[in-house]
Length: 292
Image (cartoon, rainbow, N blue to C red):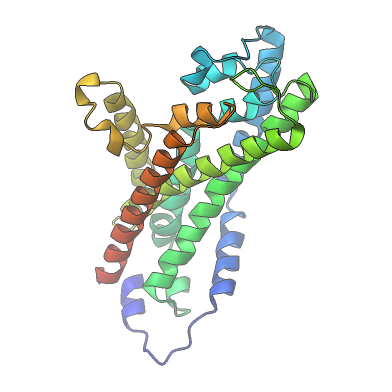
């Protein structure tokens, strides 16, 4: 077993350089066909949405309204608005598709490599289990950031091509300069990346307990769906503050306001950081105690 190999490495064995391990992890991730397929689909989705909204020719109002409550409602304001399209598509896909990408990355990181026997090479390097987890967490974070920023980039470019640079309207009704609009989209993408990293950390925690990556993906997605259902129940309002996806849609809508409210964004970032710490702690505890 791979863990037995690790247990047998002596303290005098040379440790593999961290930079080389990180580079090898990224090489492995971005040569994985399913990762490239998922990232490609996410990248082209804003283009499809932008073209579909243009053909539908149903622009929504630029001011505050129903566009502030969810990804689908945000997209109702994206026709004729180059700023709303990238953030709206991020909000829409954050409900399921983006967490799927993060869950797949976390599942492949430990359970997938363990199932295919490729994890043995990492342990023979030799690599301490803490460094192994660090490298895998870095890989998951890279996939999360790549997915979010790629969607933001293609969404922004699509909005500019279709609507022009003079349609950078906020939900508050103000018009932004191009640098200010880029800044808002970057904030949205960075915030989404943190949320996805938290999802990936939970996937890593589950992945450390199994050799079946599909079980990891199914468990994470089931958790996202369950959290979404619980978030709709007013009787469980006391539980909502601990649900990871409680503020996802509202926070992204706040990014499009001028000035940008920071309360919901900060609360969501803090919640994601807690899930990230808990997920990585559970994964580390499992890796350091696993002996078979």
